[in-house]
Each structure stands twice: as structure tokens, then as C-alpha cells.
Length: 464
Ligand SMILES: *[C@@H]1O[C@H](CO)[C@@H](O)[C@H](O)[C@H]1NC(C)=O
Ligand SMILES: *[C@@H]1O[C@H](CO)[C@@H](O)[C@H](O)[C@H]1NC(C)=O
Ligand SMILES: *[C@@H]1O[C@H](CO)[C@@H](O)[C@H](O)[C@H]1NC(C)=O
Ligand SMILES: *[C@@H]1O[C@H](CO)[C@@H](O)[C@H](O)[C@H]1NC(C)=O
Ligand SMILES: *[C@@H]1O[C@H](CO)[C@@H](O)[C@H](O)[C@H]1NC(C)=O
Ligand SMILES: CC(=O)N[C@H]1CO[C@H](CO)[C@@H](O)[C@@H]1O
Image 1 (spheres, helix red, strand yellow):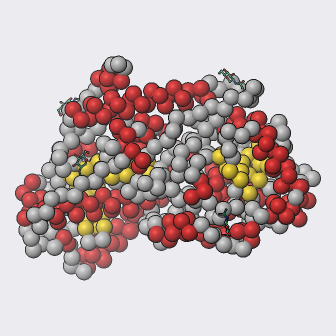
Image 2 (image 1 turned 120 degrees about the vertical axis):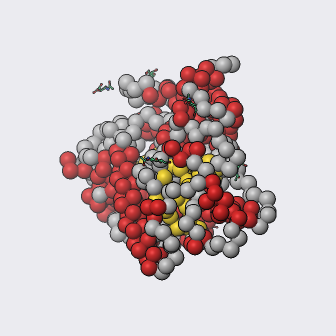
Image 3 (image 1 turned 60 degrees about the vertical axis):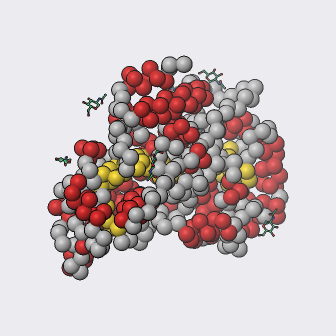
């Protein structure tokens, strides 16, 4: 919930800043005489006007008053209507659903977590492109993670490196924050602090997620001391002013974590490329992450010896023994911080990704990933307009299974587990299995290309 509200806050900031940006853009553009009309007259379009865009070979975009409309089917941006420039192209973006049947509408944008079966923009016309934005955990909406559903979309922006706009590094501001020594504590100091602190720290308040991390950590705690500040497996209190989940990015909180030798960086779900701040935070602080999450994490680590990657098939006791050995052996521990002390990211894949991505993270000087997603779709819509004008066949975009995928969640089965009173742990597997059926039903109903009711949907889900 807290993450959600922080995200909403960011969303609001993005909205406000992109609104200001737009106002400024409009003023500049208007002064340059490129727009013949002001923005508020733009939404008024009809078939003839769109045809005009197609047929008038000589009209350059900015001489024309007509723009394709792109409808956010999830009200993510909250913007009832605004024109955006995307390079040389312009599109009108709106959350007004009555644009579904408007002739200027060329694309629909969906936000994964809000993607709802009960009101899809059906019927879908041949020119209606669908685009999915989903950067969050699979647990927020499992049914999108199956081929029958993901392939309904033409364009994707997801955490998968295979998507059209990969958001894998969405929680990493820059290479600089990784190599920075701002929070780094020398090992002598950490060794001194070991008199009062455990070697390992864990901070989670989203308990019993699909990765089943709490059960693993509970088992690990039998073999090595872990200070656990969050609500899950809690055994140590944070200072009162840092107890709000919004304090997770505060300096005071970072300083507490930076005192430890190891941070348990356990994702809430285990899928390739699903990497969150849980990994980047310890790397930033100069604490060795003990990572459990994306099986392909080696693709993204700053160097080949910068994190201890948990093998879920090995007993936690073995990991505990390894951590204890490193705790006693300074030289060996420091091999994991070598890259940090040299301030060098040797993973060229990560370097390239950060250099080439077109969006920034909490950076007012760069577009955010939602702007870039909107423009990707806008530019693709225009690309086909231009091809049509030249008499070329339209280009076809199609999401593929690997644009959003995650294997079924697995539970650990140690002899004993935490004294839990949460049944949540047990729902993930069945909810995943149910989502496979939902995906199949959703595809069938969507391809029928008529609107359908929730009742019809559930009837279809349970039809076999
Ligand atoms: C949505 O768009 C329609 C035109 O397509 C317009 O009549 C209506 O007022 C708009 N709704 C809002 C809330 O702006
Ligand atoms: C790890 O990286 C270092 C330095 O970049 C390199 O010399 C070494 O061969 C790498 N080891 C492996 C196993 O990839
Ligand atoms: C979008 O996807 C649909 C369904 O797969 C397909 O029929 C359509 O041709 C695609 N449109 C574009 C522009 O790629
Ligand atoms: C779980 O148990 C603890 C202590 O046994 C109690 O404080 C907590 O309220 C319980 N939670 C729920 C959801 O029942
Ligand atoms: C389906 O669309 C028709 C026509 O637009 C509308 O009258 C009807 O209420 C819709 N049905 C559902 C289930 O949304
Ligand atoms: C480790 C442990 O005690 N797990 C229990 C958690 O709760 C479920 C029922 O909600 C039990 O089946 C588990 O054994």
C-alpha cells in the first residue's frame, strides 16, 4: 500500500511536471508559429479530418491540426486530454473512455495492475492498437503473465528485457549511485559494530509474498543472527521516526542499514528480470546483498562478485555457514566489495542499459518511463500512417510470450516454519493456477470481439 501511495505521489509529480512542461512547450511552439490552433480545440476531430491526415501528402505534421487519439484505458495519468509531441509526431492522449468509438482513436493504453476484465474497449477495430504498461510484481495481476493474454497486446513496457520498452532497471537512478561511497562504512567500523549488531539485516513488511521469502529467512535465522526491523519476522525496532514505510528512502534508514555486512535482498516474486530496489539499495550503500529473486540476476549485477545469490535448492543452513565464514574472514568478505572500492561497474550489459535507456528515474531533466511509453505508441501509430500514405503495407507489432512471464510460485517445505497466522502464503499457487484459466477465457472472449459481462467471463473460466 505504501509503495502504491508513493508511486501515486510520483505519478502526481509527473503529472504536474509534464503539465508544466506542456504549457511551456505549447507557448514555445505557438510562438514558433507551428501550431495553427491552440491545444483545446484539438480534440474535435472526425473521420474527414483523419482522412485528411492520410490523404494530404504535402501536409507536414505540425501544419496539420489533426492528431490520432490514444486512450489510457486505466486512468493512470488522470489527464482528460492533452497533446504531446513525440519527436516530429503529435498525439492526443486522453483518459476519456467515450473516445472508444471515436474515429480518431488509434490505440489504447493499459496499466497492468488496473487491467480489468469487466470493461475492455471491445469491439476492437482493426486499427486499434493495444499497449500494456506493467512494471510491478506479478502478484498484482497474474493473468497478464500468460501467453494467451500478453499476446493480445501490440506493444509492451514491462520489467522483462524482451519487452518493447524494457523497464528492468526502473529502480536504479544511475551508475553513479552504485559507485558512490556516500554511505559506505569501512570494514573496521562494521567489525566494531558487530558487538551490538547482527551480521545480517532483513527489512520486509510485505509478509508471505509468492517468493515465500519469510519461510526461508525464518529457517536461516536458526543458523545465523539476523536483525529484522520490518513487520515480517520482526525482532528489532527502528527509531520511531523511521517506522513509517515512507521512511524507507530516508538517510537515517540508509545509515542504519549501511552498518551491516549483509542485507537480505529478497524479492516478493521470482521471475527473470524482476529486479527492485531491494537489490540496488545494498549495492548503493556498500553492503553485500544476499539476493533471492530473478534467476537471471547475473545479467544485471555490477560485477561478477558483487552479491551472494541464494540457491533455493540449497539448505539455508549452508548459506548461514558461508555468511559466518565471510563475517570472520575480512579478506574474503572484501572480495564482494572490490568493485565498490574501485568504483567500477564491470558488467557492460548494465552499463549499456543505463546509457541507452531513454527515461530517467526521479530525474527532472529526463522523461519518465510513462512519457516514453506514450511516445513509443504515438510514433508507431504515425509510422503506419506514413506507410499508408506511401502505399506501403502497415507494420505489425505483436507482443510475445516472453514480454511478460513468470514461473508458478513455489513454497519452501522445511520441517518447521514461522509461527504464522497468515493464510496468504497458501493462496499464491492456487491463484496462479486459476489465472491460467482466466487468461484462456479472457483471450477467447476478447477474440469474439464483443463486450462481455463479468458473469460471462466467470462462466467461461469455469467452463471446462
Ligand atoms: C469525453 O469526450 C466526449 C467526446 O468524445 C465529450 O463529449 C465528453 O464531455 C468528455 N468527457 C469529459 C469528462 O471530458
Ligand atoms: C569476473 O570479473 C573479473 C574482472 O572483470 C574477471 O577478471 C574474471 O574473469 C570474471 N570471472 C568470471 C568467472 O567471470
Ligand atoms: C495489433 O494486434 C492485433 C491482434 O494481435 C492485430 O490483429 C493487429 O494487426 C495489430 N496491429 C498492429 C498495428 O500491429
Ligand atoms: C497474528 O498473531 C499475533 C501474535 O500471535 C497477533 O499479534 C496478530 O494480531 C495476529 N494477526 C492476525 C492477522 O491474526
Ligand atoms: C455492450 O455494448 C452495447 C452497445 O455499446 C451496450 O448497449 C451494452 O450495455 C454493453 N454491454 C455490456 C455488458 O457492457
Ligand atoms: C510454518 C507454519 O506454521 N505454517 C503454517 C501457516 O499456516 C497454515 C494455515 O494457515 C498452516 O497450514 C501452516 O502449517
